[in-house]
Image (cartoon, rainbow, N blue to C red; front, side, top):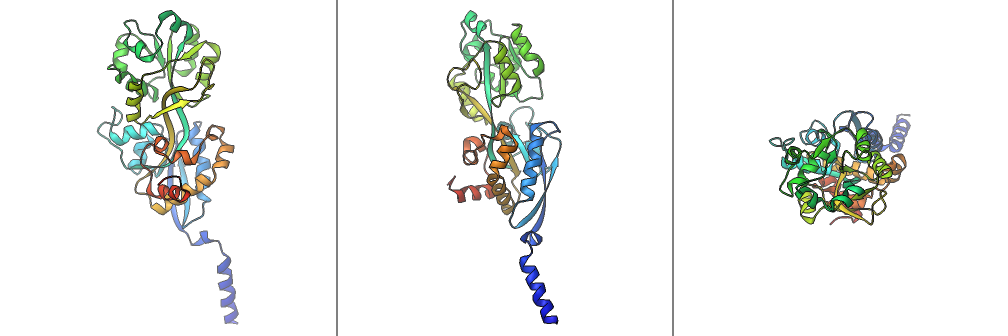
Length: 332
């Protein structure tokens, strides 16, 4: 009888799911406050990771706080294991660029997924202003003795930081332009009205295609998309915002592809995360790309293969993620 019990026990063990024997791992994924897109992404990404198959039984706690400038530091310092960030902010944090990160470099983060959502830097000017002033490029506007009235989001957004770096490429700065009386920083709810009322001339933004304010602006006021020089684009690329073409027809008033800077949303991990854990969660998320696209239309254009490349991952890949991408033949 004992013999039969042992055989039965062995048979039962042989059909038990492997997850029972997997090593448990607890991860913290930092997103942003409820209501933000990263918070919504975090819930679904966490579910996918928790159901992943592999050597580890992974559980995920989504941290409902953080943001674009907080998350790179939180992940790098180990306050979180994973986090959504703008690739540009990840570079600024890694290199200690700007007053937000100077003296507190956060260089212990690595990319898991790149190019989740592409945000384009746009310089949109009222058509009547361009026709009246004769200023047709960003460089001409900054150098003019009578520059346009720029409107952008308030402090706390990445937009003023990006605008400052663009001005710096032309030997100016946000503070310099502010001292000339050309800068208004205001809530997004008021930007479209200012352009309609002609109390602002040029709107600087950094957002995915279809962003509500830019859509409203271009639908209610005749606008043109103003190019920046290669000098500006090269400077931005060095700061984690590589060149890209915003697709033709993204907004009314856009004629042809718009060459500009791009800041992808990426998922990063602490560099000390176990390689096997990083591999397992990378595989799970990539292989659930269709589910992610169906759940979040904003991520429908995410191409995991493109996201593994340097222009969309931007910072170094985690070795575990890189291993998965090499297996797929996407990187060398």
